[in-house]
Amino acid sequence: MAEDFMLSALNAERASLARQDPDHPLFHVAPPVGRLNDPNGLIVDSGAYHAFFQYTPEHPRKLVYWGHARSTDLVHWTYLPPAILPDSRQDRNGAYSGTAIGTDDGVELWYTGNYKDADTGEREATQCVVTTPDLRRFTKVVPPVITRQPEGYTAHFRDPQVWRDPDDPQGSYRMLLGAQREDLTGTVLLYRSSDLREWHCEGELSFPDAGGAFDRFGYMWECPNLVRLRDEESGRDRDVLIFCPQGIAPEREGFENVFPCVYMVGELVGTEFRGADGGYWEVDRGFEFYAPQVFADRARAWGRADPALLLGWAGNAGEDDQPSISTGGWVHALTAPRALALADRRLVQRPHLPGLPLEHIGFPDSVDGDGARVAALESSRSWRFSASLAHEPGACLEMRVGADSGLVIRLSESLLEVDRSRTRYPHGGIRRVSLEPGWAGSVEVVHDRSITEIFLGGGRLAFTLRSFLEGTGSG
Image (cartoon, rainbow, N blue to C red; front, side, top):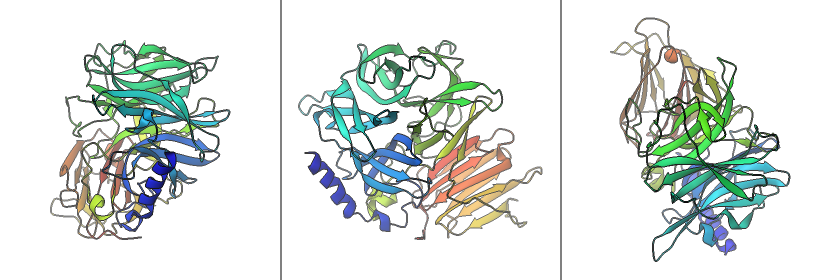
């Protein structure tokens, strides 16, 4: 059966027109064919970066694999055959998201197997393992390691993150899992193991300093990811919890996407996330961003790559109608890698593309009718640049991207405005983001055919969008 699934995927890739599509990114991970969503199993091994991802090569047929791409410079990616196939009962309805961890024998890929009974419609979510000695040969562990959710929780029980506990002298392992309580509220569960095979549930992640702010915070928490960073301001190590709460109502500016992605800062002690006082922030303010994950490193004892590198899905639920699906038979991409830092308890994200030169551009003295300095970026292909906003009262700059200026990025001291209403994918139209003092002083833009990422204030704000422009080039 496995051979049939692999053959189906490879045949779809061979017949694909994606690589000839001028919208297909050059240095962002994008599917060879079909649909891509969450990044999975990100790991560094012997200087090579491996990015797995949710992959549906026969989209819209809903058979979810793990796709696989490899790079040594985070710019040039080689696409390898799918690593996990939905070829067994435990994952017949999809090999869902998860992470990677290095072991003495190689690497283990942890994921959620999704099974749905065709007669009753009942779902089963199990936590599954694939072992690999070399990140080329993959073997499933059968049966699943965790066969069902604990009492009191529904089958919305998925997206394991597994790591070695740096605070345990015995070197035990921990796991985060997104979950839903039977009262249909979201949470995160914590598990512990001494050998990666026998696990016990420690309980829910609690927030003793949040005053109940997260007790009924959406109906499901997807893709939890924990990373420890040193705060550049205080010099203190802190834990950053990133997750995607579904079903929260926007209570302030932002949170305009169908499902948001947020983070909070504290300290994980047992099952308590201490110091999180109820504050949370969106990881990215753009039109498309979801389910980010931080690279593990097989060679490091704690398991995280250094610097901490993040990839996210430049997409969201219900956005499969992008132009590329009709022109090239593919949809969605991952973001560029981002180096993470922490400054005064706020996340900082900087593009990490060592193989892609950064150019600094100056803005001309000419201004438009609104007094903005304008740069027309006619090439709609792939580039990366930085610029600075003049330190003068009322300063404003405007970037017009594409042969027809279809994408407009306007920046003042207090506001970022992104207008894609005249692109081939105008979803959302115009989005405005209020800026904190100092954020507008510098801007870096990464553009790759049909994806644009904007970073302000040295990475204090990130904004991702798909930007399908007229006249996209092929180079």
